[in-house]
Length: 113
Image: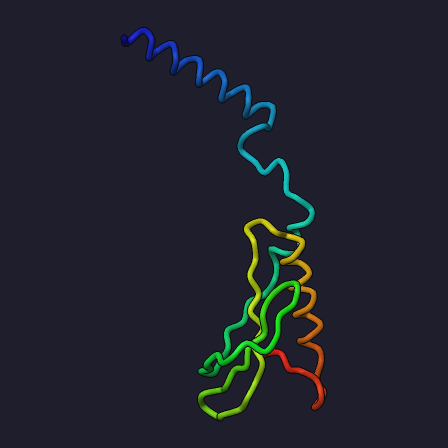
């Protein structure tokens, strides 16, 4: 039994050395292009307490609910977006939409918190 284990260990060491030498293991070999910009989306936390109300609409990516700022009583809308695992296209499109909303400041348009 010891001879078999020694033989397996020796084989694995040679295999590991060969894979390492060819740079097959030990470094990132492939990174999908679609996830490059997705991985750098900044996250923010809402700085006030809020409570979700009734659903007022829905679209391709999610549902929109009434929402109230518990501290001030201000009525708002909240969009809930559900993502499928590894759906990089939807995540990127949502991140792009959020970046646009961050730059909008007008009394008649929605605000992004």
